[in-house]
Image (tube, one colour):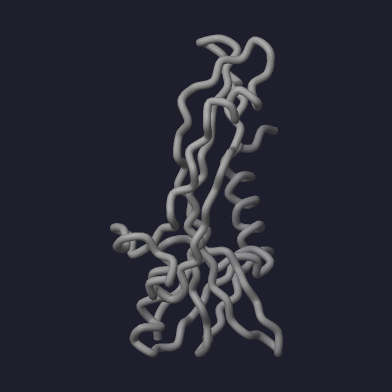
Length: 168
């Protein structure tokens, strides 16, 4: 007898969702941070059609945004997401790029990467917990902080991430 494949897939998904569950908790004191980083990166290729190029990272600068407040070392105004960025790191020189180059490789022009790591921190059972989150949860936490409101967090698998943050 043959069973429909979807029936097992649906049961498997339901079982995983039931076993992993999610934790919800309400917190009154918390901090929302976003670490903004500029990094220079160069792509090295052996041929024009190289499907697995090698990347080398060069100078990098980071800036910690906390609770939606402008950091002291911020450069310029906040961007469209309300984030401040650090001063640009020095662009790699030709000598630095060539020093990282391997035989038969050709470097592409340096590119400036912009990355952001979002986190929410709070106290739980007498210890400080800091968990990664996404932009939406970070912004909800910032808005709740600015309004002086508590926050309900929905934690992910094994309480290792903040999946959702809702002001109360």
